[in-house]
Amino acid sequence: MPLTVFADVTEMHSTYSERETGFRLGGRGRFHAILDVLGTYDTNTLYSDINPQSDFVFDITPGAEFRWNSHKLEVDSGYRFNFHRNLEQTIQNDLAHRANIEGKYRWSRRISTIVEEKFEKTTDPADVEIPERLARLTNEASAEILYSTPGKDLDFGLRYTNMYRRYDASLSALSYYNNKVSITSRVNISSHFRFLPKSVLFSNIEYGHNDFRDDPTTVNANSDSDGVTISAGIRSQFSRRFGAMVQMGTSLVFFDTGPNAYNVTGGVRGDYQNGRGLSLLFGYSRIAQISTFTNYREEHRFNLDWKLKIFRKFELSSQILFQLIDFSGPTTNIDGSARSDIVLQSTSTLKYSMRKWLDLLLRYQADWRSSNSIAPLFGTASADFLKHQISGGFSVYY
Image 1 (cartoon, rainbow, N blue to C red):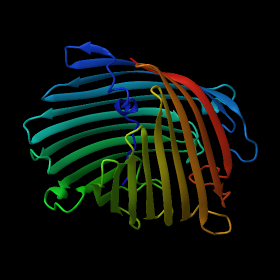
Image 2 (image 1 turned 135 degrees about the horizontal axis):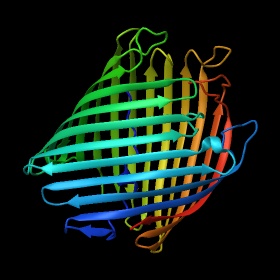
Image 3 (image 1 turned 135 degrees about the vertical axis):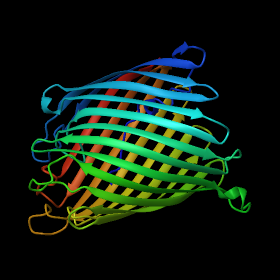
Image 4 (image 1 turned 180 degrees about the vertical axis):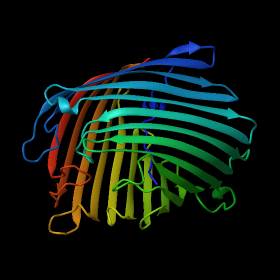
């Protein structure tokens, strides 16, 4: 069952939405104009270890956002267009459209309904995970009914999601529909057990069906599948400064033809805020998958994100991701050994808030991968690489 990852337009500027910017409409609504401009020097734009090609990259991202907030109705919507251009390596050029709208209506103190639509169309250039151009179109629609007790001790949700996704690579295309029904719950257990820290127990049960759009009679046709996902965890706030979360889950996928597949995930996360402008988010997760294609895949992920407020207008932040990946499959090493990758991604950003609607940005990013494999994987030439990016620009949220 695929995991859906969206760049939600209304979440991209979540820190801005708290500021009193925008054009007020009807007393309850606000319209915001968005413009991001970024210039980047990239030391290895094609992710190569043999012949790195440096280049200058320009990103211009205009957009708009509308929010409405009343006692009964909340609406968040947005659209962004990204114009990505390389000065020399034009094969990495990209045009991307992203839009979303979400509406929440409160029928009573206990019952509310959420309806959401997300759309994304992009001609993704190569990146750290897949060093090949991959056009992608995704449309996701969902509806959810939420039940909450007046004291917020219990939340219960029933959600239906329909997603269409299409991939276009250099040699092939893939498209499918995914329909999911999920049941989520959240229980405040500290209200029943006073000796525990402030804790919330949450769970999710999901059933999904994948319907591939290719001809099932052709060679190597994709098989439709059904899957079940179960996950649960606990989130505790030990003090005003420190909180932690533990989560585990498993998925079972049943194909119409061929062997089935499953995966097991688990992870821990902690966060810290000192009340003086410093916040930390750190975590570890493990994913183990067995399927007909990869045979076996195991991934360990370590992440550390931090943000520090410097004086009144400066903010320094950093995101670090470290991955250990081991897997075996039909396209691994030529000698038949299991493939092993080590990936490190690090981004540091210095932000200066010149106005409440204008930020200046200076950013450094480093990506590194070490692999024992030189054979193609997923139709891509996967190899070691190291790249550095230095960026500067501004962000407008008015």
